[in-house]
Amino acid sequence: MASTTMTQTTTTTTTEVKQVADLPTSAEDLIRTFNNTKATIKLLQAEKENAEKALRELLGDAEVGTINGVERVKISHRNMSKIDREALKAAWPEAYEATLLESSYTVLTTK
Image (cartoon, rainbow, N blue to C red; front, side):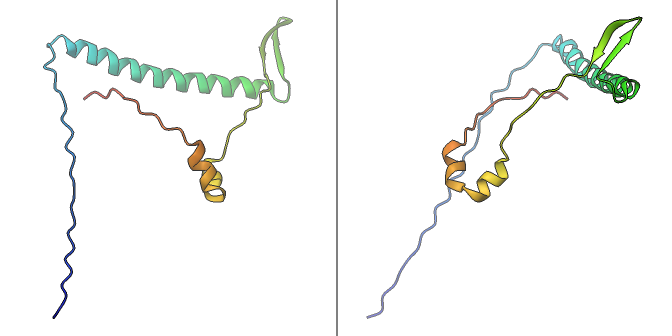
């Protein structure tokens, strides 16, 4: 007598149901403000970075800059510590998994 083995594979598909809100046309102004503000922040960040670069060039090797004898700019030294997550994961995967903290968050995107 021949023996028959059957294998059954089950695939579960999860469909996310999104709630859709029908916004009033006045929301267009909010979306425009949101997008314009994001663009302005990018421009201001670039402007800040350019000003910092120029000030550092003016300082040269000095750590303090004065104008008419008054201290106006200073380089402050800071230390930062961080973990190389990829090295930790490769060398000690159990420690990586045991200390891994994940969180969920949302991001508002506009079109």
